[in-house]
Length: 253
Image (cartoon, rainbow, N blue to C red):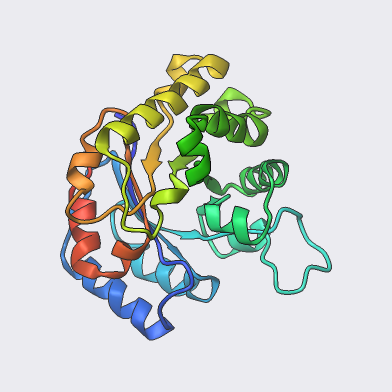
């Protein structure tokens, strides 16, 4: 079975003390993850070591950065490199979140560089893709996300692609309270898998975990995750509420 993943994206929220308390409460619940299940916490840079320390003795709990720079090193004041993340023992990094694409003008070609430099530093990218409302309303979302994958991932060899985590995030459903219906989510996830299969074959595509990332909540996680091509979620607001994120982790297949 593909890895089933509950990934928390804290974004720019919580003080250090609040983050520590949140992790303590989630871990105190005693969740026992199966071998094919994984819980990941994508936290602000200052909290990476604290989070790694909290989860490193837990089975299948891990930590991710929310971003990295696309260059190896240099005069980029305030930026964080993949090499730095690797030196901290951070095994995952979110790449291309819609907020990074929109607010920081990250292009598909830049994200290809970020994917490359993560892989060079033994960091698994959690690669985000998804369409804004106007693309969905125009009915061109399939072509839109296909282009995102092709321009940022399809230069990679098959053995690299199969280990990347993809997160589909309909931008119109992020933080809006709107959620793609289960049918819409499954349809897009199946489409993404078919795009990968078209390039690399179905045996590779069937190994890629594809997460849903649009207003996942405790109340809808089980239904979403039950879809055959939905392998968990990239969770924003609900990941800041211990009881909610516990319920989301427990909803994994």
